[in-house]
Image 1 (cartoon, helix red, strand yellow):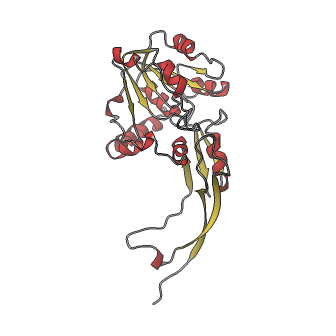
Image 2 (cartoon, rainbow, N blue to C red; image 1 turned 90 degrees about the vertical axis):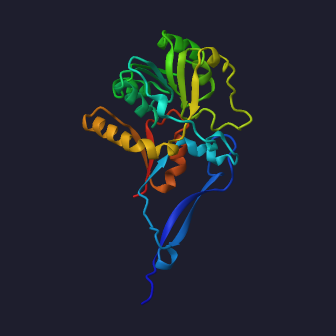
Image 3 (cartoon, helix red, strand yellow; image 1 turned 60 degrees about the vertical axis):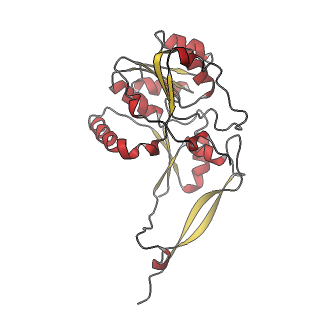
Length: 277
């Protein structure tokens, strides 16, 4: 009896050229169509062929397009100790993005005072009215970050979830409290810059006297130990309508580049997703 054979056409984006700086364009990423064989003799024993229906688009992908090794390839630090005490002052940058919108709500559910920054008035309204942030500011209007943080954190910052890096991180280090913590989730303000021209942080000395701890982390290192507990906790919040989300869906793999580029502008709110079918 002969083996079953079948083929399908599949589209994929591939790197035609690295993009060391700037937002990648069609000069760097190109779409092509492949013919894939689904015959028994093309799928190894113990393997499956799956159809992808949705694609998550995340800022970290930008770092993989530079052609250089980057800090995201370094081993992450432990995340276990970032549980925040009720009443703590928490600041979250890129607060209306896929990470920020969840992190802020979780901090509020833990009893923290939460302030966020985002790039448009619509996002600020969303943070306060839908995601429950205590307050938020538009970094495109309040461009003196030191002054803004003095205004919103008169008692200092206990925890800063850094999603942007650069001048915002530097400003935060002027306002941290003793034993403050800074988990580094991303640095989207730096992703499109050549690695030799990224912003340096000039006031790291502030961390010493105040015994501030700054750590990087990658989600993949914590799925095994933390994901089951996270799912249980989130299921409870969702069933009680305590968590709210926004996402932006781009239909079709052809729109991946458009969706990817949207993350680096103030136009995007929430999680970027590509719907394939």
